[in-house]
Length: 626
Image 1 (spheres, one colour):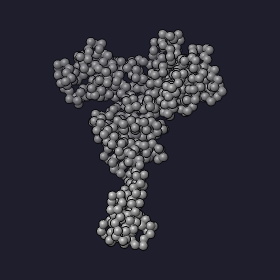
Image 2 (tube, one colour):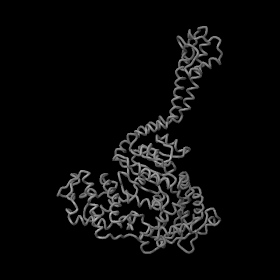
Image 3 (cartoon, one colour):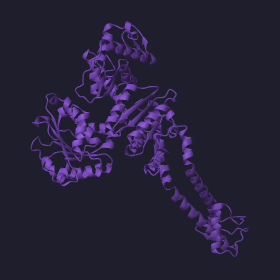
Image 4 (cartoon, rainbow, N blue to C red):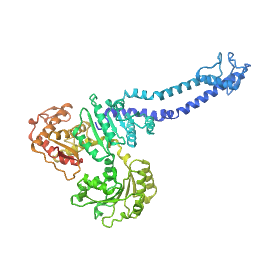
């Protein structure tokens, strides 16, 4: 299940009214609860002292009138000889209900208010203190009634963004964080987010988070090893779920580990309602970065006389993904197919080693682009002189990307390069990975100072920690491509949206059809496994074609048809020799493989033959297991 279910969305709408009540009424009271109690306590003490003093002063039973009220000494209240300190002490005794004075008859209004308000303050203070002590137990009690919720492991910058956005969409959110001093824990509590303190790799903590009833789990801890361990623990616990779907999204920074786990993700598919998804915000972020800031910069295609020249400062996780994605896009475009090379200059303290490793990991990288490694620190005099910006032996730089791990250093480097290239109108993109305030600062500078229009900031986490991007995942990408291929093939055969209602965009597609496409995508790994094949991320960009043997094509086509028949029957479809009728849920193809017309069987075979090209579009390649 790659998005919040319809019942969850309906419930979410109903909760928004409660969210407004908490925000505008309950939240201010919660924020200032101790201040309010102190004010009420002081008020009760002063009223009590004043009330007792009034009775002392009226020992002669005279009438005292003040402010429109009349206060009279109570006959049974003996306060003769009491000092002001004695009456003050009597006021303090009101908070514990242990006053040594017996009151009979009429009581002055200030004293009447004080002897009700003081115990109330005492009770409220005790209740709040008790609640603070028992809050964890109370929260665990409430968690027992939560279901279809989102569990987020790790409350760093990514975890906080996901928690906040899911809460804004009305979902119930449970956060697991091991750092008890994390300042965002209190912010989560203020938003009504459940907080569990402990390690997300602890099975007991995961059980307390009600994994058996959860709909989504997102692990964005700071360490890849911890995230991978969380995934293993959740898979184990998910076996106890009762006909519930659980999607587990795990963040992995290391490209090799992420590629390996994605390969296992596709091969495993969905089992017992559980499915793993692995994602990398750096991988997702560079797609948006290249879309907004293309390598050609401000040059239009018709103005270019040479391939673009990218300058990448910093070859960390973000810079590495940027170079690879840019090279892959160039390799697939018309100029790349003609053999022209994209120029890429990399500035990094370990540029030579990192470029060499990158070239080994992606064999086609060197043929797709002209890589130049400049090994230097951004704090060195060599960088300040910026002589490398004058490309004497190659095309002029068309775009600059600053992708350093430290955001403050990125801003400093971006400003230095921008000043050197201001006259050339070369766009400089500052990639902010953590500190969103720096991105805001750059945007404010850009809007107020016209000379800085070519300096822009790309807020990585704000742009990538989006729910639709997260919930998409690998399976969702494949499902969308399956639908696109289907619509394209139907159009070639002469069909139209009028004759085939399924020929619409993915956003317009009914949810039942989306679920069908997701199920087909999840089944790809299972079909490949039956013929001794599997999937892995596409590193060899030339590996577009994979030739299956005729018997393998036949076997996988049969498996796909069998899967399709079972799916349709579960949804209430039935056989009818007449043409397909979506409204009546009837189809003439709900028969065994042998009973299918040859043209339908050939359609399934062609789908298998085109599988390698289809998967390459999604960034995967088929390989044969040894």
